[in-house]
Length: 360
Image (cartoon, rainbow, N blue to C red; front, side):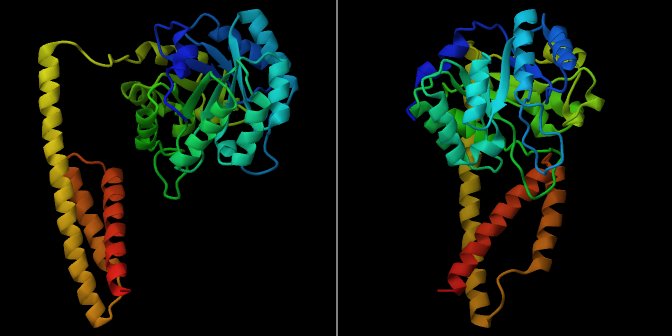
């Protein structure tokens, strides 16, 4: 997909003085519920009213959405409040029904993005549409898979494209429901700076009390907007109750969020910024140099183990290193999560080096 400034046209044409906001319940439950929430969001900064109609669940037997009936409720939302509407689609039939009911924005969910077959089917059904189409990142941290879905839609002559960063599943437990893996969203943003990027703090956190902090981080990273699940009675929601906020809380979040300038033309600011960046460049080069030296030491260990026929992995030694480095990291203001992730990557590279030597 070529870097195309036309991708931003639909967002720029809205002439917003604030980040794009997509809000509404995880699931449309009843007509009264859908309309009640919509009316509470009517005169706010919300740009699109979202509601899940078809809800793919991890396991059967859970609430899987009201189906096409909910599309009529979204039509009423638009008639009564003037809010534009949004919902998730997962196949051709969903697309056709959503367009028939004049839904303004459609998104492809994380479970669908993982399947090129599903994405292609949706792209074919949407070919040439003027609807806004957003693609959530795949469940797993796989940037090429995410890009592939976007490219399929772009190839279907869909001009109003964007992406939703909703975090990634991980085997290891973290404080997030889906680990943000900010670096992947940043890499996507770097490759395609004109592709609108929306953050979904509800699915990243899984907890309503963390939504503000993740939203602020996203805005600090120049995201274009937020998708926040909003329910009039979150604790009684039929799906994802713990990650939904009330309209009142959403309004307060939008008031409290700080919108950063992308840059500042002031000469003193730019001088200081360039100086600090130069310092970072120096340190980054030192880090690479030190890692190279560490791998040379790992190579020597590999040679020694090969001579003595000793196994590569030494679990006791590895656990001692991890424990020591976590403590050292804390003294330097580094989070345990970061230190563990960094040293696990370094350790894996060391193992790769040693295995290559032992098996040579």
